[in-house]
Image (cartoon, rainbow, N blue to C red; front, side, top):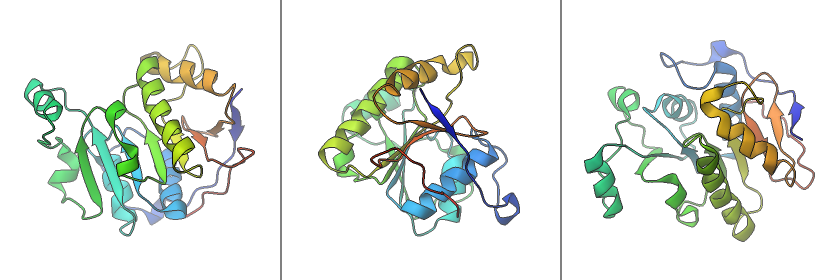
Length: 207
């Protein structure tokens, strides 16, 4: 069972906002609070065009962010498989200036070698199929078990069964995972958190 936990956030008026993001403003404020509380590296699996990345990097200039995505263009996929890094089309972020605290990785997130990054936070928001979420999560949990039991994991686009048909794999996978890990849905959002504490209790992520 996934328990719902209330979370306080800072006033939206304190922030500069992108045109729009795939996360809601409350979700963005929670992610910002996590970055401020825990620092980095903060790994974002599924950065798309970089609007959430921009928001987080802009408001946390001393935190290192690693933005990971997989460009579906055949030439980019071929280059990445050869070990090359042709870059990610993070249109929004690039058009508004790239931050020195953001590192881009164009790769299949399931192949990401987390031990090379040493993250404090992993935000899973990439491949939303059951298998995709499973691979990203198992990779993160293997890193947690082997190298850092204190890392925080967050997932986006968790929906109750029958809702959010485009992201049905996220909910199905996380409901199964909740049988073995204390997962918490953050109230008023589609975010689920595992913060690495012994009892799974949520700390107040308030900026």
